[in-house]
Structure formats: C-alpha cells, structure tokens
Image (cartoon, rainbow, N blue to C red; front, side, top):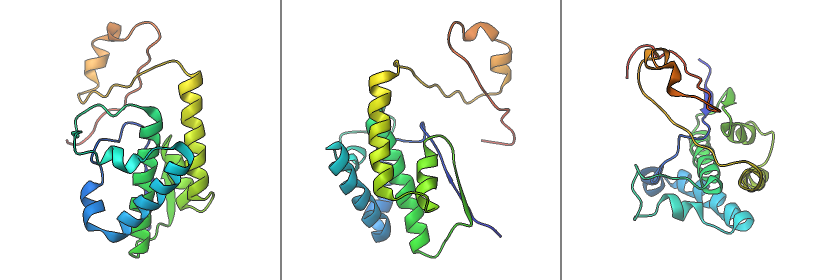
Length: 167
C-alpha cells in the first residue's frame, strides 16, 4: 500500500498544536527546535515559544500571518520528519496552499532553511501588499448556503463541498 503525506494550508493551526509530541517524542522535538532555530535567524521570533505559550488556549484566535505560516510549516515538517525517522517513508506528498511548502521540502525539492526564508518573505509581502481579509468555517449541511443565497453579498465568495459520511 502506498503512503502519501498530505499537508494542509491556513486554518489548521491552533495554540498548543504538537505540544504533547514535543514533550514526549525526541525526534519531533529535535525537528521543531531545528526549524525554530531557522525561524529565529530569518524572522527574529521563536514560533515554538509562541505556539507553546502557557497563557494561550487552543480556542484562542491565532492570527498574525507571519506566525501562523511559520507555525503550520514547522509542525508539518517536524511531524513528517518524525515519521520518516521512524521508518514511515512516503511514496508521495501533496500539499494544499501553504502545505505545498512542506510537501516541497519533504519531497526534496527545496531545503528546510530555504522554505523558512521563503515563508518569511511571503508573509511580509502579504502583510505589506494584501488587504486584510478573513476566513470562516461553517460545519453544516450545504443546504444552509443554498437556502440563504444572500448570506454573502458584495465581494465575498463562497466555495463549499458536500459533506458526506459523518462527523
């Protein structure tokens, strides 16, 4: 059976993500620390310290794009490396949006350090050039949107997929 590593984009992050693994798995910890070292070099912040901040809770908004982009990459890269170091090697990778960076590194297309540098630059460009936006996730049947067509007006667009088969 083929193994595919799938990497998500924005919206999959939260304070405390990976904390239990960091505390209990030496491979994961080493990878988190290695990525965080590069982040400190390129961005001057410790994303590890931010996501593991004891004063933040999982449900609290985690918004600054520089921090979230780097946190998602740091977690995905470290989790994938942990699996590879434990003999679970992917036959392929796929990334959605921001997850493409993790996929590119795990596939060997670019180095982890280059991905961190690119993510810092990407985040700076988004902060500097893109207008403030937002994201919403609604867990419900698609009919909610089909029955309320005027719920999103103006410049807001909605894309949804029928949810099939459970929670």
